[in-house]
Image (tube, rainbow, N blue to C red):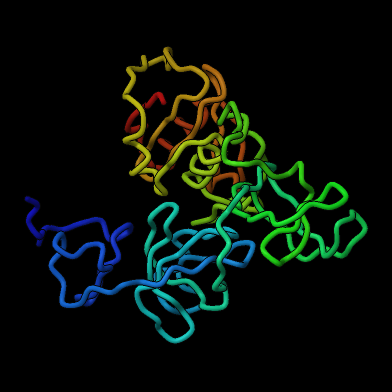
Length: 287
């Protein structure tokens, strides 16, 4: 039998504030009100998950097209609730959502693709969609797929949920030079943990949102003072940061120093971060 908890919990992934929480936590978290949240779909190419119900608040995470969000409360022009894909909690503009009955049938499997108004490459562009956006294909025409009553995507830029990238590091490398965006997960800008999360999603794996959560993935590995023992795909963690080894010497990461996704030698990254007072790596993990 599980007892209700009064202990601290991670509010980043637990919708609880002012005594209100999701009904799913009844019997687990002591609250005044348990709400049966409504689930809506994001219909923007991307939408911010914010720290407060106001434009200009800190962005904690993002939703991509087709991702679901459970609404617990409305505050002015914002919904407060929880993203169902990575569990993050925060405020999202009401305008980002639409009620629909579409279940995703495919996901965007190229870094970025256009949503066209018609099924041809000369049609006007409605939007640009990012890798891992979720879509529902209802028909095909002329090599294009019609999605969610919104428009047409080139069919080969979509994959079903039985087909994923074979190498998550290659996915991460495809983001080279994408600008750094705090809390970002979209192809036009993302942060360090967003890069790892999106690379793993595209490879068919789940992944939490923040680097401290990700530091529990896989198994710990021992690395020599000379950084020997690392290989492609190993993860390097600092406090508040993560990078992905591309081989036994170099690492790929989105970082605030370059303000973009870069590949550089791990030794160079370690020395720079230590010189800036950001400390040494806190751990190395292998998936």
